Image 1 (cartoon, rainbow, N blue to C red):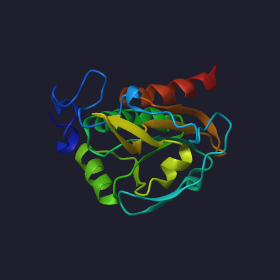
Image 2: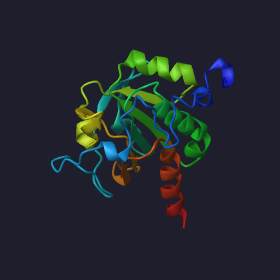
Image 3: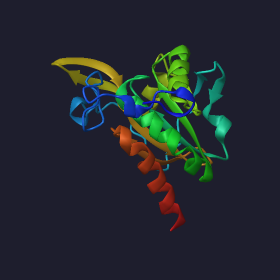
Image 4: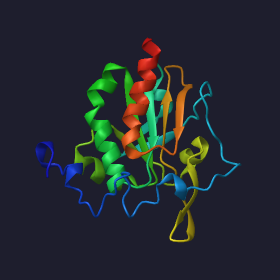
Length: 196
């Protein structure tokens, strides 16, 4: 199945590729796969969001400080163009008009190269910025680079997580170990609570 302008839709993923929890067989993403590292930074509401500067899929330099005056949804995903990450990104793209109406910019980060991010964004029609955190320095600063277990082996990688940052650069809400389908509801529910 294909989305607008011929892009492949997330619905095209086969049952073999996607499990009911939204993770693929090639992603070590379920909560049970993570080992809690007491030395990892954990950001909380009110903390100043760690500043960063990264290259996006179009080779533009993007700084978090560029978005002062806007809310920002910063989310970290393990690997471009894998089923869970595709599901997550497509859900965010579908919610783009709603997020824009709430004055929210979106920045997605993974250890992929700008070229891989560009291919991923082009394939699925993603219009928000995808940033290359190849040395995982930003992931370290946000406390989302950690140990993962797969088939009895321990590896290091991204712990899928999302952060809402306010207009002044402070954390509004942090969600570690978020599921692919939970990112948009996490953001919209937190922003809706501001209106009440």
